[in-house]
Length: 137
Image (cartoon, rainbow, N blue to C red):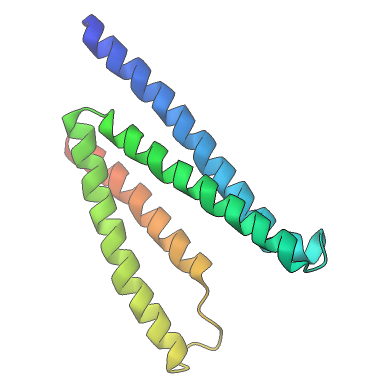
């Protein structure tokens, strides 16, 4: 391997860890903003607003880090991630609308929660990355 390949791999590894840090931090702030009012601060609106803002700021950091991560990938990995994101986006939009309509029309006996949609999009993205990596080998 040449020096440029080693440098790209080191940069990708570093960006992957940074993205994992930002993603983990965002998930933690989601949990705090969601469960904090009930468990920690007894529904104080001011404290809730602060943690929701922190969550949004950390989320923006995660988005920017995700962009940096993707921009640092080689062309094949960019294609793999772009394909996976396109599929996940489509599943999110179509699945989300269908899920919402199921709730609105009372076809499902429970409220449609965004957390299910987020899990669906995340799982779809992961499957898309794995399938694309296998396909392009």
